[in-house]
Length: 117
Ligand SMILES: [Zn+2]
Image (cartoon, protein in one colour):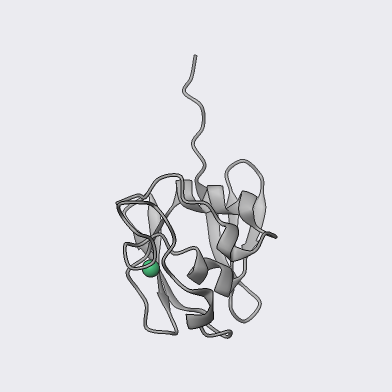
């Protein structure tokens, strides 16, 4: 039996002025709104490492926040440098694939099943 295919992006591009679009190897094309990505940042400034609870307050994130730079991290993730100066979040393929299922829900409801750190 071949191992199950792990989700991996085929192409990462910008969508519109601010958003990020990922075409996945399973055929999905997902547009991630810029602020949604900022709110979903999995780094230990935004998520309590011990409890996995999100500590980032939605009210503290500028409405027009957006990624200034998208940088590859190895072959497993991207790092996003946001316009509010935040750049410590590493978005793994696994996390981004999980987030695709959360799109359309309030960002505050995004669950953090495991912290990649
Ligand atoms: Zn963060």
